[in-house]
Image (cartoon, rainbow, N blue to C red):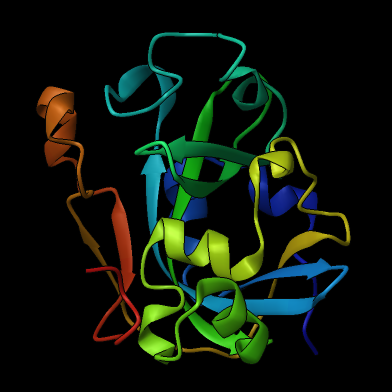
Length: 193
């Protein structure tokens, strides 16, 4: 039986959460329908020890969500046009998060195709901006509770080997650019490009 992940799942360090999110299902249940997919790619962002993390330089209006308990959504805009969906991890005052980079679409695929304006299954959720658009995630999801009913993550029977690699597009982060904090479902065809 599929179960929504409890708050306790998120109240652990970002690396553990990022690794264990592989194979779970991210779901949105919005007015126009339910959509979801298996999480096949994540990246951990580890706060004060991670120059690639938005929370690296401390508390700001943008990063305040990181400083509460895990299990909430952090969204931000990249390139002025794409929403990135993140899971806040750890306990209060440990500002860590996990970027969801790719999903294997499973639910509401026709609705995802409409939202994305794409017909190719591999193009629906193979990148953070793509999956946010496919799931209907907007800037209004900032602070949404993953233990609620609008956006949540649930268990699955999905089995995969998980590999750790360098994160993508964090070359600016010095030494942190080399940390193996990206997790992928090995060989999955829905990974980001």
